[in-house]
Length: 396
Image 1 (cartoon, rainbow, N blue to C red):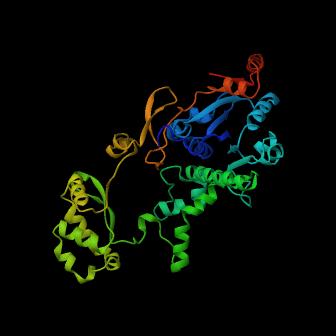
Image 2: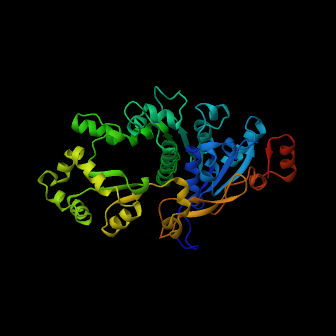
Image 3: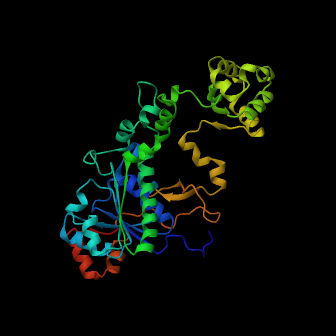
């Protein structure tokens, strides 16, 4: 999009009470699309700023294009400041334990009485029902929702290698907010939107549920599944390198065989169709693995790319910073890390008018926008100073 073209949600104000991944993802998506997103943090800051290990990158990944205000919501003065901000908002987003926002008087029922046009997005572990009292995590719902069973080997359930339910749950929260904004245009009224980890996970495994409904046979875990395609595998090749190779149609099988001198297999009537090759995998795949084993991954990549066959190197996440496609297409943008250093971060995986929505604001410092936001909702400098002296707020 050109600089003169406004982003689609410019002019929409979001006040978010979120942490970790799910809620922040919702706010990031809306922020990338132009909304003003105000992150309300506790005085000590969002705990996500201090995570180690697999959580070390959470804050810079999911909090770009946002403003930060620090408020102690355990004090009435902090809640009052939050209410003043909410009075200016189109959307409130939260992902705290059930009942937390109600204790603060910041739940949907309380706020919609003050502003019937307000859209309120709750990100939870479960939608209302028998499980909604449980504490959920991405890994919890992967285990109980069939995804870990499908990802791991038989008897060895394994969570997916990223926070799929947290991220997608936040995306569905944002989609719900977008739908509610459109509905508000039609009715003049806001509504509550709910998104949940468990239900998101069930949506992800629906294809396996429906496989059972269609065939009467339970889906096997992915490592031991019967593939729908004859050639669709990771191959270990020269010098122990690995590469994923596929030939998923009869035309691709023909091209593959001709490219690698396998005319005899191409002529074999037992391998004529894709379904024939699926049934023949037990004896076919060892022959293919042996035939390809002396080629390097680079050689195989070149042949597959030349012949427009599906292939993929086995890439580690850190290698993606140097991916030529991502760098050539603007898929990575400079981002400020928690320690002040600079890295790159992936942008949204879509374009608007040929451009990826970019970074307008770096992930905020704790309380970076506190003073400006409080002034905007009517606080004087003296009142702000008084709030700071009583540890109700802070700024950076």
